Length: 355
Image (tube, rainbow, N blue to C red; front, side, top):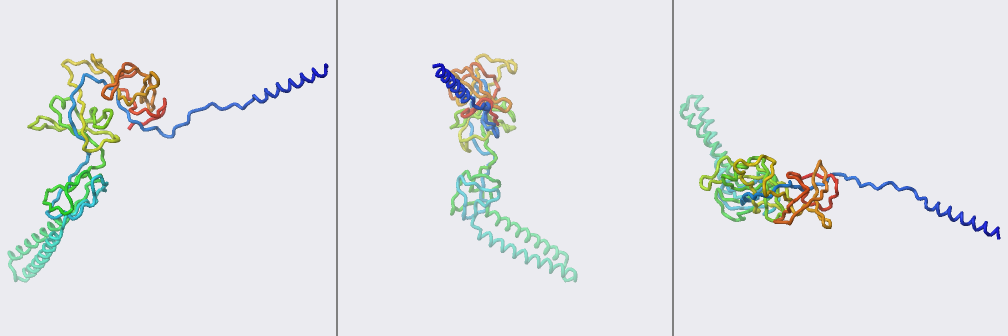
């Protein structure tokens, strides 16, 4: 009986040791976040006051580089190798006008030039031998010079039968067709360059007073859910004598879905009141707003990613009701801070690059 109890105790000890040994698993290294290879490119806008409301001015989106190519010689359009939307390289032939009459005129001018040059040379030789008067030699020299000029003009006119793209871009419009008979000044093709887009508007005297090159202005473009921040490129030095309005050009950043010809509106800041508050002071009734697309909602919380020192920092904020694509910020943000407009896929602290 004692032997049986000893055997049971020995077996129990072995089972305990086996259980302890099985529980000894190698320690796993702590999980770390995977390093990012490059900063993620994001679009951002500054947090700005919503009011008091300023004036909105109708405007048009167009290419910064734009050329309308017109016929410089009369004739029939023989070729238009590019259509609307086609890309063209700088210097590419984009239109040809029938040139048989121009070639004939060039051949006649060159023949007259050669004959005049021969008469000039003959008159010079006769003058050396006393067989021609100085006046006759001068007249022959003048006729030769006129013939050379006529031949050069005919050659230039033949060159005008081909129209070339002044810069790389895309065909925006083609008002002419193959077979049309055109006269000098008839538009044949419009080309938009690849140098980006701008907004052009005419602004009254009160609105233009607060604009200067480099100033930032919000631009509403049809089809865009939130305003686009543009920079004033130029303000015309003088206004129109009839409308008393001044042309303003605002550069736009590269934005998906924005094309030349689209309708836009400039949001002009309200004119400051007499004896206005100092810069940075709070204005009664002023609210900070952000685009509704910038909000990240989790349960009952609302947050935004604030761009700070090259990283997107998640910040929870208190918001009001959405209105016209924007949301009032009641707490958590300061005027001028930049927030990411599309937070999908972002995590707190990820490296980002604005643009």
